[in-house]
Image (cartoon, rainbow, N blue to C red; front, side, top):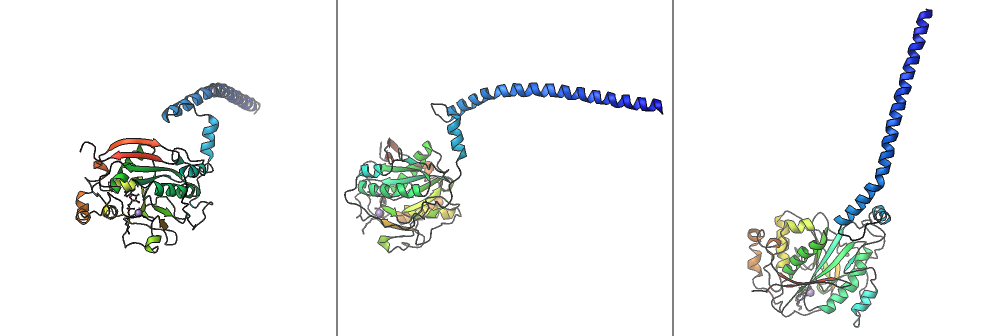
Length: 343
Ligand code: UDH
Ligand code: MN
């Protein structure tokens, strides 16, 4: 019995000693490892900051503070708290672009992003243009505050057709899409006539899972849809939706048909057209007569019969043009193109 007890105690003692030894060894090894790792962290941090700056094409190194601040922003809500609903639009005859600029101090080189939250979408507004400077000024006056109230990250692109030959709205919009994507991976594109001003800021300039037509009615048509299936004036297609249908046709010279063509492309791809409620999708069209160089296109019916046959080869993939200039104005980016160079 005595022998047994002695054996038992010394066995337990030896076990305890072994266990303590193990603990010491493990403790020593891990403390060494962590000290080493902690010394490595500042080096790794420096490397990552420099790498990020290079990858982003920034000259100065991002400070930790600035990158932390950006990461901290919450997503903006789908419905912004700044929306006002329907507003009465006033077009002051003596308005100047400088006044509009002064009222939009947070817009730089045609772009804006909210400071208070992370925008849900990055949106490019594409406006086909020639000889409509006054309309452009009124649209900018209303659109900038409207988009800011919607808490969007956005850029406004004017695509200007050089020369006096036939106007091609659709091809200009294809150019806008291709050129805008060269400087930012925009999520959503708004194809926007220069003379249509939205009246209600619940008309969200955002893309949905289906293409969206934003002009349910305008003052000039008694605020009713022009005809069932109308898909003109202002439309919103995501980068992927527009890419899928190969954009607009490039072959509509003069007025009419190009918007119906895009609708057919959308339908061929089994997508559905969404619209806001009629009280929300309201626009004022600034009065104008028909422009020179934009006479009715008598070929349009013939072209509309070919859509299902030609959409693959006529569109973004075949849009050729000569880029004359890209200018960064305070309130918009101006892209000037020539469709006839060398022709
Ligand atoms: N656009 C220009 N310059 C032009 C022609 C067209 O900038 O010379 C652009 C502009 O963005 C315009 C859009 O193309 O909003 C569509 O052209 P539009 O406004 O002429 O088309 P809309 O259907 O009018 O509004 C057609 C002629 C109206 C005749 C009115 C007589 N009642
Ligand atoms: Mn018009």
